[in-house]
Length: 431
Image (cartoon, rainbow, N blue to C red):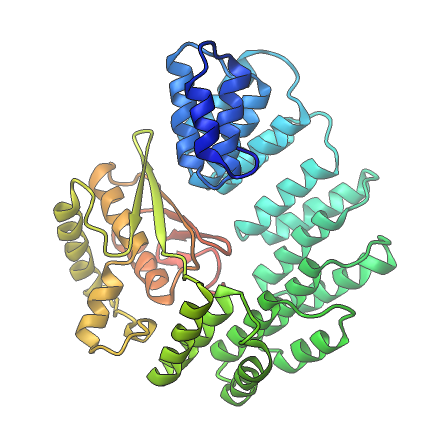
């Protein structure tokens, strides 16, 4: 299963006459390592039903799956299990618990685990700093980094990625540049592509597009597709159409034929669509098809009563789909009276505004929120994990829901966490 042959590994496992915790853990690990975390969790439940108790290796594996899928209830159960044993928690269990709580939207629980840990190495500190940064608690992340230094620990490359991410998430340009300079001069580390990428993204998002381009030209490494997308996105957000067009020409003329990065094509197609250049967008789509590149479909997961439910945009395969869509329509009607206006410009299709509004309403996180509001008591926190960046319309929608329905909503998208409360978001509309 470690080589990607999941089905072969499962056949071997199913054919075993005698199974133990080690074999169960191996098959669970195989699913998780091959991007099939939900199936790994199902096998963990089967393991428990057969009377096996998870050891520390199993706990770490399953906590990884919980972090990926947002399966908070299982993660909490495993936290309780390792504490009941009464032994000192191993570092790998501590770090995985912190990571699980952070990624499941419970940053205070992650902080508790960190505070209780006795023997903290650089990796433990780094995971906590990264968790705080992803939740928008960036001042705390930097303060924690300074505490780490004060106890005599030196950061590694991953620590500095977490620190730069905190600066990026808050738009702290001067601080980010200062920490970047320290990587080589103070900490004697070699900057990685992730470090360079954080600075490019920070400058681009902050509207310092000249500086971003100068920084890229000064780098001792070639910019990757992620940096290029960051710069293009910054141009799009800050309305620098001239620079954006120059970048597009660069991509078309020098990069696009050899580029195998799906995200670059998708962003390029979106730029064309937002400017109603449908033929250009069609050409990008044709190139993607030729290369066999497929845009990942958006999906959102929500945990209700210890069960993970997954929604895709416009999906109707849920047993309560009709009720979910009815509830969602009711929510939207209520929100319109609060000033919500669908951002139809987010729909990059050549259709009329009415159809665009309908497309927006059926985004996966809205379906998940509708289902969550149907199945939980008023005031219950709604936690959602999605695989793509939140669009501006969904972001606005969630702000209105949090204000009108007095709900706290936590959404983990591809970039960061969004804590919606009383009509505001923890990201400060910067993501």
